[in-house]
Structures are given as C-alpha cells and as structure tokens.
Amino acid sequence: MRTIDFRPVTLADRETVQTRVYESECRNCDLNFMNLMSWRFLYGTEMALHDNWLLFRFRVNGHVAYLAPVGKGEWAPVLHDMLDDARRLEQPFLMLGVCENSLAFLNAALPGYFYATCDRSYTDYIYRREALATLAGKKLQAKRNHANRFAAQYPDFEYLPLTSGLVPECMRLAECWAARKAGGESRLTHADEHRSMSYVFDNWDALGATGGVIRTGGRIVAFTYGAPVNYDTFDVCAEKADTACDGAYAVINREFARRIPEQYIYVNREEDLGIEGLRKAKESYRPEMLLHKYTVMTKHPLG
Image (cartoon, rainbow, N blue to C red):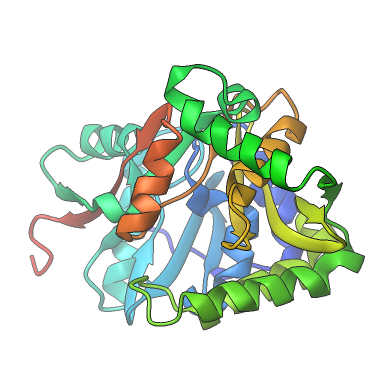
C-alpha cells in the first residue's frame, strides 16, 4: 500500500482541481471548486494528487469521509490505498456523494466489497440551460407566468452582473431572507450559509465566480452566482430573492441562465436537503435529470 499525501485544499489549487474535473464526466456539485473552498470551514477538506488521481478527504459529523476518485486508470489500486488510509486513521471507510457512474467503477474494481445507500435529500437537480433561459413550453408555463407578472409589476427592472460594489446589498438581502426563514428545517444553518457566501464574495476573482442581480426601484431584489463543474455543466451555488416580490426567483433564474455560456448544456441547481418547499420548487422547473448520489461503505467495516 502507498501512503496518500493529503493536505488542505487552498485557492492556489484552483487550476489543478478545475482542469481535472472539467475534463471528466462528473456533474456533481460537490466537485465545484467554489463549493470545495467555501464550505472548507465546515468539512476541513483536504486533497491529494495520487498516481494522477484527484482525491478528496474531509470530515462529516466527526467521521472521516472521501469523495470518489477523479481521473482515469485502474480503480482497484487507488481504492486499496484509500481503504488503507482510513485504516491508518482507525476509521471505517466512508465515501460520500458517489454518482452512479463512479459506483459502477467501484463495484467493477472490487466486486462484492461495498454496499451503497442513496439519500434523496442529496440528489442534484440538473436542467437544460436552454429550458431555464427560455421557460418555453407547456411544462414551464407557470414559471413563465411568474416572470411575466414580475415584469408587468416592475417594468423598470434590470439585470446586472454581480460585481464587488453590489456585494454589501446582496449580503443585506441574504440576511433579510435568513431572518424570514428562521427556525426552518435545513440541515445546514443560516450561519453556515452566510459564512460560505461571505467567503465567495471575499474571494470572488480567485474563485472565478460569475453572478448577477435583479434591480428594480433602485434596490436589489434578487441575486445569484455560480461556477462551472465540468465541460458541459454549470453549477448555481446560491440564489436569493425578496419573497415579497412575486416572480423575482423566476426572473433571476431565467436571466442568469441566459448569460451562462452556451457551451454549458446543463445547469446543476444542487440538492434540496430534504426541505419540502425547496424540493417542490426544484421539481417545478422540470429537471432534465436527477443526479443521485450514494453513501458507500465496506460490507464488513470491522473485518
């Protein structure tokens, strides 16, 4: 077995991570470098380049966990090294966020060695960018109506790129949104989300972030931002709107999708975290696919 030299992921790793993930078939929002960095405070995320595989290790509720390897080659050797890493740490092997294509590689490399479970709360919602940008067709008529009502009520509205000068007002909007949602059911706290968002805004250029705002009546009523995951998928990491402005969410979603480069066929709008209202909202946009993600452990963790 060969030791894996894990170390904390840093902003200097952006090109290394993005280049490898960009060329892969991974559409998983967990592999968006922006997410890896902005949530590092919560998970203590580490990375390693190991025999040309990109590996990630982190902690969830005190347990060591890994993401599926990113790269090309024989899976069995790198899996044995990851299993050995967990043993050295005296931890049961735990791999999170494993997509179905990676699950197939795991089972082919070590047949009968793992078992996997899927929690619907962590499924990524993936849409066609064109569908979000046009809201065309009968299935999206309700969303189109929402956007039209907003345009009729706020005829002066404008879309602007999210720049550093707009950040303070965006943060105030996010704080007002969180205050209205206090006591909600999310597994992540509003304080956690605020810290993640602050990190993104503080490191906007270094993360390669892209975002936009909707402004009407001289104030920002919605904002969003994200970054690419791979060659055909763009990840929307955050989206907030003034819930008193009917249709603001539909408009910021549509206007941002219109400005995502056309090379990105798909838009990942991430998980619903088991929140009923959020699940209904994400389903209402009629996703092109649901990217189920699995928790993987060994069948005999104490063996």
